[in-house]
Image 1 (cartoon, rainbow, N blue to C red):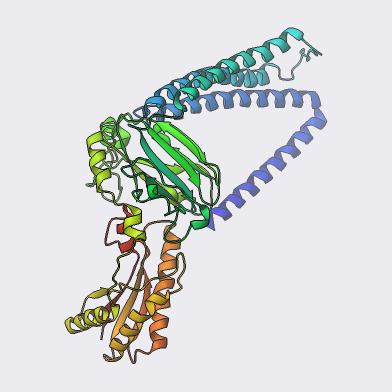
Image 2: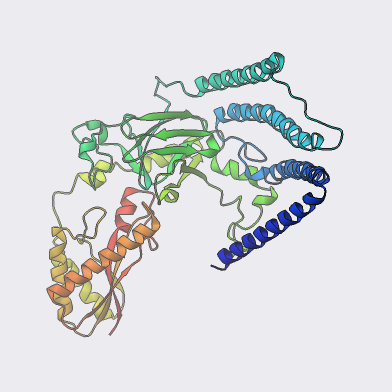
Amino acid sequence: MTLVLLLIFTFLVLLVLLRASKLIEVAQSLKNPKEVRYRTSKIQGTLLFVFMVLFLGGVFYFNFHYRNYMLGFGPHDAASVHGTELDHLLWITILVTGFVFVLTQIALFWFGYKYREREGHSAKYISHDNKLELIWTITPAVVMTLLVFSGLDIWNKIMPDVKDKSNLVQLEVTGFQFGWILRYPGPDNEFGARNFRLISGTNPLGQDWKDPKNYDDVHVGKIVLPKGRQVRVKITARDVLHSFFLPHFRVKMDAVPGMPTYAIFTPKYTTEEYRQRLKGVPEYMVPADPENPDGPKKWETFKYELACAELCGKGHYSMRREVEVVEPAEYEAWLKKQKSYYLTNIKKPETKVEPVEDVTANVEKMLSAGKGSIKLEHVHFKTGSAELTHESWKELNSLAKTLSAHPGLKLEVSGHTDNQGDDAANMKLSQKRAEAVKIYLMKTGIGQTILVAKGYGETQPIESNDTPEGRAKNRRTEVKILGD
């Protein structure tokens, strides 16, 4: 509010000064109008020339000062093979357009001073000049044609589709509000079929489980790629337009609903090798966390990232994902550890553990100890909502019965989510889910027990969010003792 008032005050002061100068100018013009015009013209021409010097000086200074932060400059060499050619074309474009930019700015502001109104000078009117028209039409057209053809040549080198997939790293990326679903093919190196009509809470991609190729496909929390191997990324979107952007690899391609696109590139530096490139650069030798001066430096915490370059909604910022490039052997070891999404999330065990005895025994142990917390293993909600599923009732009924036998307790019902989606939305959802459990227990009957509902969102994970299994464990509801 203070800043707004200050801006309004500054604007009013400038307005008053402007009006006062106009009054002075009008008063003087009544005495000697020609002299006033000449003086005003000279002042304006001089100020334009001064502005040109400051403006061009600022352009060169700030580009030089921040060069180590900009891609393609300083230490930020392209992290992909094709990116080097793109950076080279960028430099040519900058030199050509930069040269023209400087000349036109100098001409613009210098002419403003040179051709100011003054005694003994008058404007010369030229209606038409064919030679001049040809020069400033043909010259830009030729330069732009050369740049466009150079760009097309590089585009054809980096965008040919790959027929031999034997040594190809394949990855499918699906954008949604607000995150990415990352899928790798299994040992068969083939993606299973998808059908948007099959999309559900347990099948976010709409994979057709009748297609055996889906059985070994894996879902992951971050992109891991091998150095030196060609990567083909299949890019889709589930709702609105997104944009798959790997800035350090110079890769950018729109993710369009209903129209798969793709990108092909070859990583050139591992994550650790890129960190070593930043080591020693002053801008990256400072602490990554300003509040922890003894903590790791910026170069030590550097990570490649996947970003959405399309403004896809208010949670757009949360679409950032980590990309890690490792040596080929390390990549193969990582890939072998990933588990099939179908086998871990869809194909259920034949037998189920009855939750009644489990929750009763666990609550009794917690109450006898007078501290601790228990996870409600069989309390679940419908996807994206705080509505309890029918399978949750049996465990909650058992919990309510146990609590009613121990009056006077104060317990906290805590809700937790994984890290998928918007942080604020996850916090809000976890709070609603905790309150839903609290309301159900109170309606069922828990005697004098006091319940407090608290949502923690994604702030207290118990497993890594990099795997579907870990995220499933982090989506949980717990009950813990606060006191008697």
